[in-house]
Length: 437
Image (cartoon, rainbow, N blue to C red):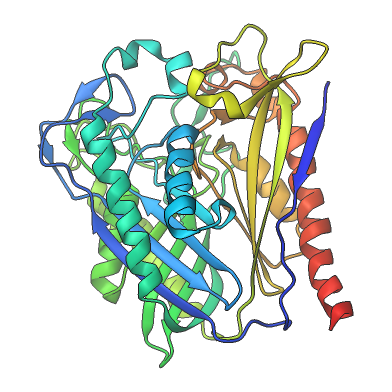
């Protein structure tokens, strides 16, 4: 097995151990299309109406030294090249460091395509015989940029709190028969992650500003028979929590590669009990928010990144727009260049993200080895580079290995790289700051 790991460290030491003058802002932008759109997820199909609106939800945070932007968009996924295009515009026009720009997708399978197909076209070419709607893509991109600019202008003194919640709204979807054959379904005995990672943002006076909830669940309550645009479970839950609290909720999906909603692939919202997720997950997010009893205005944000290089499947074609995400060694080995991002908040919170449909066993193991009491994984971030499974699950086959570009051993490579970074760079940075002081 080949192992190539390149570290890109962009942590900057603050002048103080705890940042002073913490500010935050939140913006919610409607991106519901006015005309029929090709929906991403399942087979190629066009929308014929709207069940519920879809949005960009944007949080900006500033500790006086670092400005950080996290976006949750009610779409299935985007190609990393589409993220790169957005990041380049924001860097050129507004001097925003791409390391501090995280664009996540909720992974609803009932929302329009945005941008080029990217890697999915390699595995599922029959779904992409049409051109993407450039006009709608431009609208989504411009609204996102405008939202980020507005959030930046609206930065105001704020406080931050963190906590955990729990919800039984998901289930392992790798169903197996008596012969070990694996298909998409339900596996109540399979690995799962039912934790809700919570961030609470308050205004200076202690009133609620925004919530961020991190939970692993496929946006597949509705099947390919549904032709109504919808945020699926993540979108409906977000709207419900917002109605209850009066502030935006950014739903950030987790390691949902092998995790489905407990009601999955139904032909309509009613058949799929879509509204039940308001109770199954929405009320649990509200409970988790209530459990956060301590917040602080002394916040330090530190960002960093690493690129993990791991061999890709033999004979796998590669999209032209993703040239920055592959490399061929002198010996002819084709590698996937997988960008991982990190955000450290004070001494307690470590968040890592990747453009992956990650199996939950991997993020669970990384969390178990993290020295930080709050370790969150933000999935579907800054693009999509396929499913990444454990080596154990690869031998059972099924759908997910067919849409993974990685050779065996990738899960181990990723786990080692992320754990080493969290245990090394993220912890040592704080210790070095103490020495400087």
